[in-house]
Image (cartoon, rainbow, N blue to C red; front, side, top):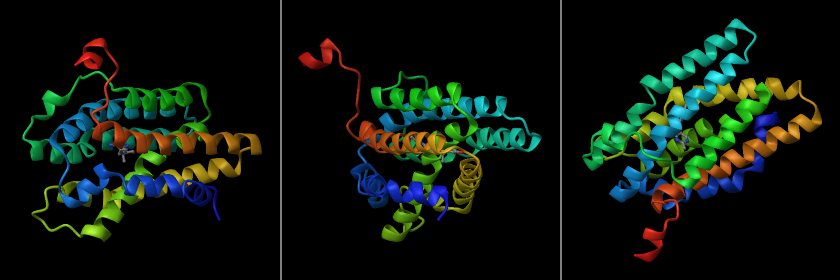
Length: 228
Ligand SMILES: Cc1ncc(C[n+]2csc(CCO)c2C)c(N)n1
C-alpha cells in the first residue's frame, strides 16, 4: 500500500461525509439553492486565486526544471479550465461571473486558504503537496460518485460540472499529485510523514466545511446580523 493509499484510508469517514453533504448531493439531484451556489462561487473564485499563488510558491521552491514546468502548467489549467465548472453554476442561477468576484472570504474559506498558505510559506515541498492534494482528490471522487449515482443526461443542470470532475483530466491531476507525494514521502522521515498526514487530514476536513459554509451561506458575525 502506498503512502497516499493510506491517506485515503485514514480519511474514509471524511470522504463519505463529503459525498453525503446536501450541497454535493444537490449537485447530483440538480437542486441546489441559488443563494448557496452564489455563496460558493464568491468564495471559490478567491480560493482558486489562492490556489494559483500557492502553486507559485511551490514553483519558487522547485529546483528541477521539470517541477517548474509542472507547477506552471497547473496554474495555467486553473486559469483556463477550472473556471468552466464555475460558469456552469453561474449560468444556472443566471448571474454573471464578474458579479461574484472580489467578495470578502467567509470564515471557513479564509481558514482553508490560510492553512494552505501557512504550509506553503513555511513547509517543505512534501508538506505543500499534502495540503493541496485533497482539493483535486475529493472533487474527482465527487464527480465519480455523482456519475455513478445519478448518471446525468445532457439536459441535467450540472451535467458539465459532473463531467468535468469525473473526467480524465481531473483523474490525471489527482494521480500525478499522488505520485509526486508518494515519492516525497518515501524520502521523508517518520516525523515528516506524520506531519504530512496531519496537514492532509486538515485539508480534507476543510473541504467538507467549505461545502457546509456555502450551503448555510456562512458569514462573519456582526451586530447587524445578530440583531435581525
Ligand atoms: C474548495 C475547493 N476545493 C477544490 C476545488 C477543485 N479544484 C480547485 S483548483 C483544482 C486543480 C488543482 O490542480 C481543483 C481540482 C475547488 N474548486 N474548490
